[in-house]
Every structure is written in C-alpha cells, then in structure tokens.
Length: 303
Image (cartoon, rainbow, N blue to C red; front, top):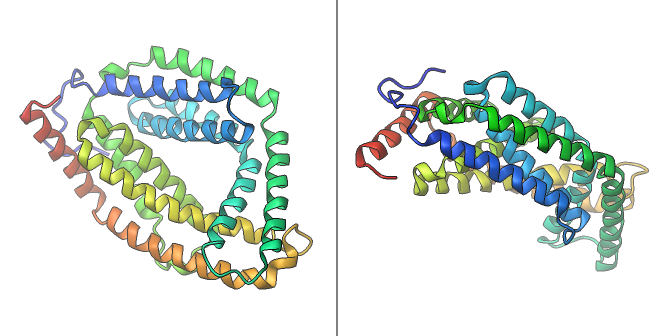
C-alpha cells in the first residue's frame, strides 16, 4: 500500500528506525528473561513467553514491508514454536472461562465448581509439562540467539515513518475485513482469527506509542478491551468442548450450556460495539490520519 501523498517525504533519520531497534531488543530481552528466571512457575514462564512472542510477531509483521523475507521467516518460525504450546494455552483458557462463569448465578453447587476447577488445573499442569519441555526451551533459546544476531544486521535505521504507517494500515485493514456481518452466528474459528489480528494491531500501536502517546495509548487500550472480549468468547468455546461426551466436564453439560450461551452472547455484543468504534474508519482514512498526526508532530518539533 502506498503512503498518503505528502506524508512520506520523511528522511530515514526521523527516529523511527531507532525506536524499532529498541523495541526489538526489549522484546527479545523479555523473552529470554521468561526462559531463564528461576522465580517463575512453569505457568508464568509459558505466559510470558507467549506474550513476548505475540509482540515479536507483531513487530515482524510491521517489518514485513520494509524488510521482506527475513521478517516473514522470523515471524513464521516464531509462530511454529508457539504452536507447540497451544495445548497448555487451552488448559488456561478453560480455567479463565470458569472464572468468567462464576460472575453469574451458577446452576451447580460450589462443591461441583471446585471439582471442575481441580480437573482443569490438572489438565493445564499435564499439558504444560508435556509441551514446555527442555527440548522446546532449547529450541526457543536457539531462536532468540538467531533473532538477536539477525536484528543486529537489519537496516532498521533506514526505515522511516511512512513505511511503518503503511504496515500499520495493512494490519488495520486485515482486522477490519474479519469483522463478521452477524456476530452471533460467527464461527469460533472466525472470531479467533479476528482476535489474532486485533492482538497484532494492538501490539503494533503500542510500538508507535512514543510517536503520539495519548492517541496510541487510548487506541491500544480500546483494542485490548476488544481482545479481552473476543478472548473470553474463545475461552468459553474451549470450555464447552471439554463438556462433550466422554470429556472431563461432560457431567455438567446440561446445566452449564445455557449459561455459556448467555455469557458468549454478552461478550459478542460488547465485541461488536467495540469493533465498530475501533475500525470505524476505512483503511485509507486511517492511513491519512496517521500521516496527518505525524506531520503535525514534525511541524511542532516535538521529540
């Protein structure tokens, strides 16, 4: 996508590249800390690794246009590594759904709720132990070593704001296109894909927060609220899957299914409202606004 006329006439010394370099270093440092900190439980380490990976992949998506294949390859390998942790994520998702369900009047006893929680906690622990193995930790360490060496050779300092704004707009458009016409009839997989794009968009907006702190911060917060609502709907889908015949939560299926439907409806209603605000602008208008804000910042001489 070409930048908006008049807004890409910015030299490569506009400071954008330096900010991208700093962001790359910070994300990789956070990921390495998650792998090496002995104070973290396995669940905390998995959470922190996944969080750093999402930020890293969002940055690689942002660099896809300026760098091309190197950024795409890095993003693809990081995605494949995280797929190995998907089982542990499902266990935590079901526990998060249980917390969500507790916000309503439950049609089951507290004893049953404690039994459900114990079963889910056991599943999470088993899947974490099975997936976050020493071998995977080593693979992640090797990847971080490669990422640090690679990032040190990339010409990030030559990237200007126009190139970044173009990629921000691409991500914005990808998320906007996934907004369902009928939120309540949308398949869980479709909503999950939308959530991934919203997470990516949120992290990218956080990366450019120093450029205009107030707007980017508010925008990222709004995207986070949408991500949380979509995530809660996805967690409920995972929980519901564990109530299928012969699954560990099957005994409570008839009593909890109506409540799950009600909670899902509430999350999707909120998601539709948030998305309509967040993605109200057409992509060209969004890109023009980014350019106008950047130009105003440049004209004001702000650092």
